[in-house]
Amino acid sequence: MRRNKISVIGAGNVGATLAQFLAAKELGDIYLFDVVDGVPEGKALDIAEGTPHFRTSVEVKGFTTTNPEAYKNMADSDVIVVTAGLARKPGMSRDDLLNKNLEIISDVGKNIKKYSPNSVLVVVSNPADIMAYALQKATGINPKMIMGLGGSLDSSRFRYFIAQELGVAVEDVNAFVIGGHGDDMVPFVRYSSVSGIPISNLLSKEKIDEIIKRTRFGGGEIVNYLKTGSAYYAPGISITAMVESIIRDRKRVIPCAAYLDGSKGKHYNASGIFIGVPIKIGKDGVEEIYEMDFNKDELALWEKTVLSVKNSCKLVDQFFSKN
Ligand code: LMR
Image (cartoon, rainbow, N blue to C red):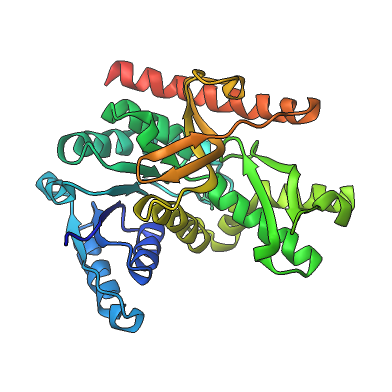
């Protein structure tokens, strides 16, 4: 029987950490691609040599893409995860990466279109909502087959901070973050609970505000510690949850950047952009987008994050009109 095939573009910290989580979970054969000569081959071999301890039978292979022919090896991938691009350094926002990462995504997109146009795509390169939009432009792939990292990671941070504050098990905290994966993201308090008990019954407003702020700047907190790059362990496992739901058709409901086309219901009063909303993830990619009602304050936060994503998408449109 053919094993699933997962291609990971970019073998930096996020790509390699992800590859190891995927190998540990035996989600499929893993093909790592990177532009830095020898790095994908070396990291793939290193990960593969550890698989006897995981007791998992998967192949892990690496390909340097200075030779563009290398991309042929991603043909017929079930899932392609795009992590390629620059990571931010202290003092930068994710949006500061837009111009450089746009060029990289555009190039990766051409190769995906050529060699594996039927894969489900998971976009991680920052700013992720905008890069998901760009990858759709570059590939022309059905937007339902594309999702961006954001809420999966931000919600994990939000859940962790709530659990820490209350001294309860993380698994009993259900909380999620919607909107763009930037400083305007919206940690959604009204639907956050501990085993069904609303967090507003358990924590003061001041404490909740503190946790929201820490969640919004969670990526930046790690960047400030690391100084030379950004987080990769929490991103790696958050992407793994998305990939697992696609590969095993688990139908998990996770907030991720998905394309809003305005065709169904209110669609969050937004259309023509990718932005974080709760979605059902299965073998066909984004299988459902769940609507939520906002009160006045939530709507203001939502409109702010939508505006910021829309403005960045305009830069993508300009780029593609010239390239
Ligand atoms: C994160 O949230 O950790 C990633 O988006 C990386 C970053 O720059 O913050």
